Image 1 (cartoon, rainbow, N blue to C red):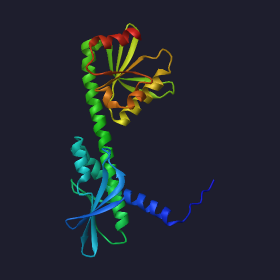
Image 2: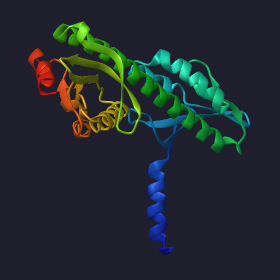
Image 3: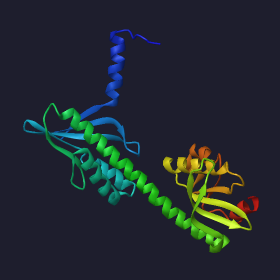
Image 4: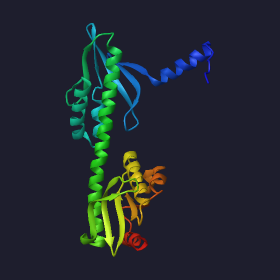
Length: 253
């Protein structure tokens, strides 16, 4: 079905108003700051700075991507990621800002888009890598906790289980006691961590004699609506629960 919109001044005003909310530009200390519709992992908008250089223009993210990465504790990771992104996208990186040097007026729209996309990409990749590093640390701490509860001889660290789809899944800790098995996995509040764990637990849940599945989180409240996603095929507990809670999952397996 094709809907023909009326070409009225009112309709044009609505569209112009919507477009103006997506992109804005502010002049500060002689430079223009263009707020784009792109967003960083934190939810903040990607802003690009444009400065005049004679008849040409200098375009950069003025270190905003670096600041975003620093706030999530990923400054060092960002350095390497941004350098790789800059090389792939044909822009510069000086260990602080992603930039394009001296573009013409005709090249300016493309330069702004390239810098905005590059900055967002570098920050989002950094966010994912930071999340993965935290997951490794959390699973290492979880293994130590399980070792204190069940003994190290009962735990297979970094085990692999083939799910109903024939996909081989890595599981952080597989506890086996008297033929009873339970998978324990540390899961962060990062959407990628939750979705990956949910897919893993869902596939494992469908195999014959499936092991118990437990997601260990720092805070259920912090998961928000993702708690429902995660709890569909696994039990969800907070890290600091009593040892008896861990034992209860083996008893129920």
